[in-house]
Length: 230
Image (cartoon, rainbow, N blue to C red; front, side):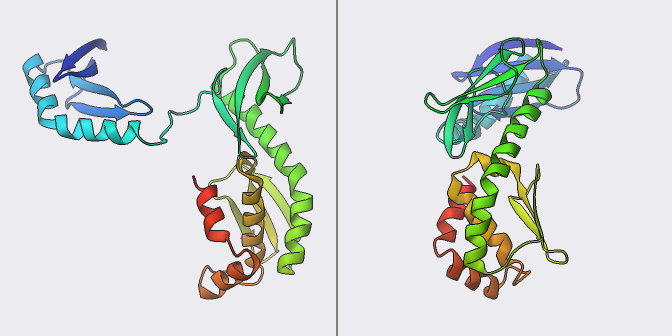
């Protein structure tokens, strides 16, 4: 693959020439970087015309990306921002020889993550997820007791795992499972999700009856739901 930096119509472009059949255009977050993958046989003139034809779309896409909160994929490296209970923390990688376990500096909002030299992104992500798991497990008991008193239902068990949904409830055995990444969110979100899942012990579906329960037990649930999904 051959790569080069070019400019067409005052748009900075990273051009990759590859052994492919078609030309592809991408505008990437977080800064709207333009990347074109082009076949080896395509001429410079064809590439220029390709960009000119899509110039309006490119500029519109860049504007949307640059004025939104779209973030680049996390790499779990020093200097990244990660959230814990609704607050933004700076991630710092340190040697396992200097630090044996993850340490949180609550005053300066820093998470120190001990890793091996040349650690893999997947390993660092797993370690941080384990922090979220432990934080959530510590937070659950008092929130559960509060929400049980509000809803009047108690689950047989509350489990924590990495999952797509924020939570789910098995109506058959009354078991609730919560997403470990709730530890990233404002604590009020945990309370909302707990009430939501406890209401499923009364009404399994999300129909009018369920929403009426949510209105009764968590009057501002719609506002909290927006905060949770931001």
